[in-house]
Length: 541
Image (cartoon, rainbow, N blue to C red; front, side):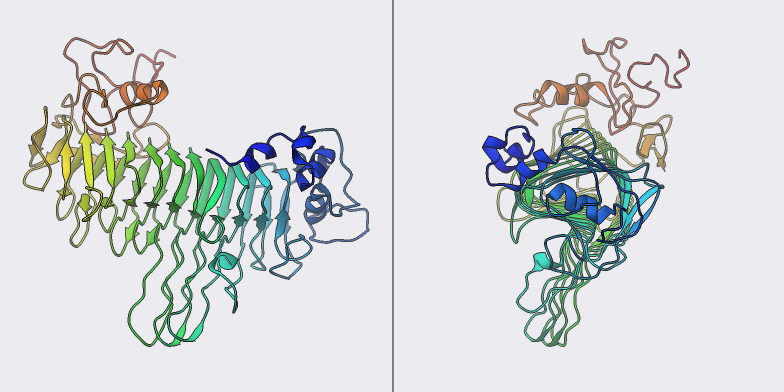
């Protein structure tokens, strides 16, 4: 459930409920502000800068920025060009120096990520969203933000969020947005003891010191080349741990990411010291902890690096769903190259591909996952497997249904992996084979990771692969004992389509198929047309 602050931020028309809050000022300021200069300035010169436009809508300045119309929430419109922030000064919360402070709901709209660019120039993070603030970004790029290092007496939060930092009761909504080359600050250097932990969230950090009750929504976003902060130095002790979340770090709330790419991000390196070892941060692409709900849909998580959880890291949260997503070429030094979870409730992974990761495909520690029609292949690790389950608490498990786990090194499965049936696995590689329709084979007959249609790369079974028509006839996760309750929308996704959005072939009233025809194991249904078409190549159109 979202907190009242966020609900109220969507009800700008009801200022009676918002008395005494800055949101009332936002309601009065509703309209469109056009930025007329690329320069970062506060001056009475008849030009409206981006900084002045934000001040205007915050209700704290911007006299050169007229408001036109009555659009709510208020909107800032950018032309083509690079809006480079140039007024130095960190730890200032009025938006006069350093980052742009957001205290009310504001939309900022560009002409496209290649045309409208907001550049932090390494002076500070780019946006700081305060309690009650809502930042919506459309069709633009945010780049080169750099959060300050932790100063004496400061906290890790001070150094978190290289592009954007969000406080409690705030909301972030990004649509067709690129965030690149942003860096969280480093941890505190110390004379003795352990150095401070590096800042979290190379691109985005949502949290107070230990929690967050906000909302993050990202649709068609690309996070690339962002870095969490490095651990602090210790002159006579151990270096500090690196920061979590190379791309995004969220400490709670609700997260929804769809049709997006998280690529080439890294958690913070451990700091240097004279005694003992230290650790890198976790969650190279995304680190989501203590979430009320998180969904990653139709996205690609690739080429990210972390201590654990090279692509994804989930810890202590509730409802987490990964669907229609490819997790590939990520690296983790201590496990979970593709994903690591120690979530409170099982993570649901469906119609997804986890392949070519280093440090294992999926690592489950004191937690659980439910894998439905996923392909886990060609992952490597020194000790762990394609799917690795361990831990002495919470009865950890991986429950697999209609899934492929094959071609992983050194093993395909490890620990308490349970079959719900119709899985295809390697022979003698630790995976269960006691479910209905299970097969263990020497060669799964899988093609390479490539574009097989749809919005993400996938691994398609080759002609003659035992995965073809090896799957369930109904793909019902409730009947298979995997899930207790599934919404009608989710059931349709699980039963009627593969990762690409192509039709599953099996006997079901919602999708007629020839008698006896079964779905294929794994994320891809070979030869199936996109839903709504008769032929795989769309010939009938």
